[in-house]
Amino acid sequence: MVKVNKNITDIKTPPIDYFNNLLRIKSNNKFKSISFGHGIPMYTPNNYYKFSKNPLLDDSSYKYTEIRGDQRIRQYISTKLNSKCSFPVKSDNLIITSGANSAIFKSLFLQLQYGDEVIIPSPVYFNHTMAIEMIGGTVVEVNSIAESGFQLNLKGIQNKINSKTKAIIINTPNNPTGATYNNDDMKILAQICDKKNITIVLDYTYEDFSYNLNYNPLASFEHLKNLIIIGSFSKTFGITGLRLGYICASKSIIEDLCKIQDTISICAPSISQNILLQLLFNENDAIKMNFNSASNSRDKLIECLNDSKILNWQATNGAFYAFIKIPNTENTWDFCEKMIIEYSLLVLPGSIFGEHWKSYIRIAYGAVSPKEIEEGVQRLYNQISKTT
Ligand SMILES: Cc1ncc(COP(=O)(O)O)c(C=O)c1O
Image 1 (cartoon, rainbow, N blue to C red):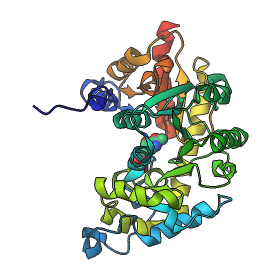
Image 2: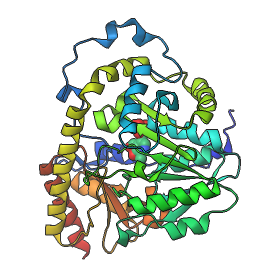
Image 3: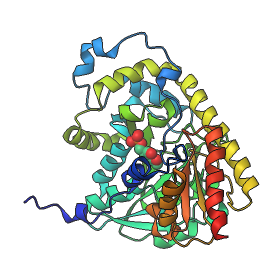
């Protein structure tokens, strides 16, 4: 029998598939199914772009690219990052990866040895936790303060820093809270990490989903010395299935990252890179469509939650998530199952983003129309009113 590494067996499986299957199998046929579960945007390239070249007919789609990925894509990202960073970013600082998740794993694998600690503001994006634990590192969660709109708990973070702290993962705009961390706090954190030689791994997957249009967490950093930026093309372009993301890091560690990239995936999928090459120069159309639809759904969500008077959401300014406390409910797991079985509505329990958040649910509104938001919130309201 294959003996599985304990680091893997000890990790909890995220229950997203469980809830998706429950919706498929157990939903109440009196209601049309609505999913507030998927963290995806509304539109794919078929909605905003007419392909002029067929990537299937291009031989390069079937061959490896450079380990670091297509030079033209890296050039494009460096231009985009240079418009936001005070330090220069060159294409030599970049590696195209198969999605941000793989970029995060590779960046942590680069740094962590057994027992090293990584601080993550909680609630956490569970794949961050899983990556650290698989590698043999230790996760140190620092609870954000809900009343502050889930802003960074700088004091809490500082208290947890010790000689074993290797990195801090910052995800802004945040999944699952939608928080965009204050620039001043980010600046302070960057200074602390500089002084203590701790890496900030900045998961910037929701870069293009900020409702405060001047938001720019990259402005808080003066150099790439202790910073690794993780980006994704999944949400901006509506291409979650193409599996494309990137790592931006100091040149001094790019060679070592290339060793990991080569061993795990050699390169990001070539056909996906060829598709992206056509989409890149229509990025504004992609952003406009996906951002505008998320923004409309967010407006509707704010309106419906205000009307409900039972569910309080101090609207956060980014991504497409709302993290909301359910009144009179200690653990929302059963509540989420009930919402599917009785109302055919999928919301995710807060506990999958950290034990502390058991009384919360996550609503993902990126791929849900305002009409479905209205209907979904009504169903939540109907269930909650039974217990209040
Ligand atoms: C915070 C965060 N990071 C990374 C990812 C994964 O992105 P990708 O599709 O580029 O792997 C997600 C996906 O939902 C996410 O929410």
